[in-house]
Length: 329
Image (cartoon, rainbow, N blue to C red; front, side, top):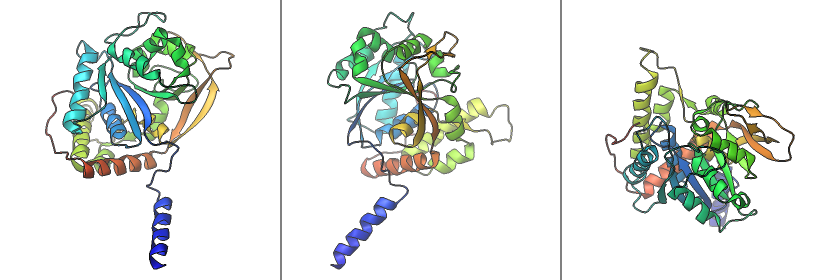
């Protein structure tokens, strides 16, 4: 009897703990990630968050292009991606990696072939309207849009969750969108369900100052130390030069908004789906099609969830400290 009571108390404490995620995801939630890792530092954080989470069944990761990277940029991103997963996360057995498009679409009718597009199309065939494959898009959306152009029926088998645009209702310029505006015109003109985490929401909820980042991540094992090193390298190179002794300016870990959404740690609203003009602003039309727009993120719970899963991963995987990095940032 005493042992039974102890078990009941333990379960009650476990379920009531604020650090235990009790979200809607089923076991082995299937996802494909498209990333421009190597362009900035937020992709590394998002990739880590995704891969240390045992609930995700990551079917593959696709590198994509960015104008700030050496040409051919998707090939460069692929090398950074392999370094992150194999050297930093020490994953001998990891999701398949694919090189995506090295350039944006030339128009909204012509796909740009790549191994990444082929992988999306082939993988999507086992999914349906009631069991959709999630495409996380945290870079240029070229490969996702190309898959839609290659096979429009894919709209019945996938959904897109992306970090994109500046704010609602304007839309507006944002790095991932600017790198392939035509791709986003294709996506918004399709019937693919779309979820967007925009820049203004990320700035409000996912900004970390120099001190915040250090306190958050630096003491969480070799992977945490590496993420802190990347933050410092970025901060001193791009944020600090004009600020002397002022460390108050923060940087935003943008792309984690997509994982926060999947974890059930955001709020969102559904709006009529706009069309996208070439200047990256929205043209609002009367339509039955919709878009899901993230309106807020519970960053406190998100970071707690991230650290809990990061620590658990490092307890079960032999991860050693690797100094330096072959690629920037």
